Picture 1 (tube, rainbow, N blue to C red):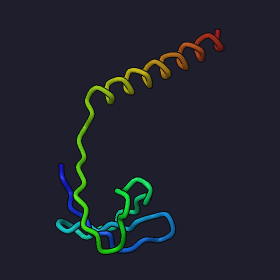
Picture 2 (picture 1 turned 135 degrees about the vertical axis):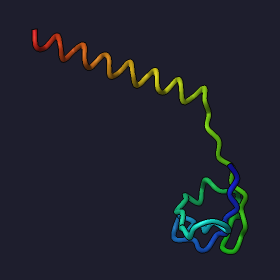
Picture 3 (picture 1 turned 180 degrees about the vertical axis):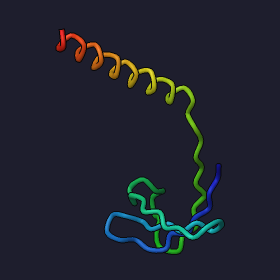
Picture 4 (picture 1 turned 90 degrees about the vertical axis):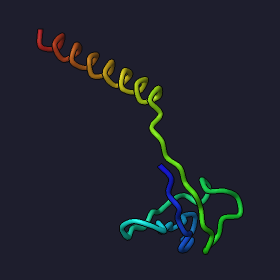
Length: 78
């Protein structure tokens, strides 16, 4: 998914991004995570995609934590 945004303003260390298309919205984004030299009025192309591998790794890790907590809870009740 690609999103074109305009940098509406900078508030401290946060840039307020306004999508050029779609429903009205304001995205508050850390300025340090944008390209160097980004300032008010700049047009940025942003891209987002799902990282299937990382999503699965995190899912397995969280499931392991849940299983561990359930095991501990059962042991505490015994």
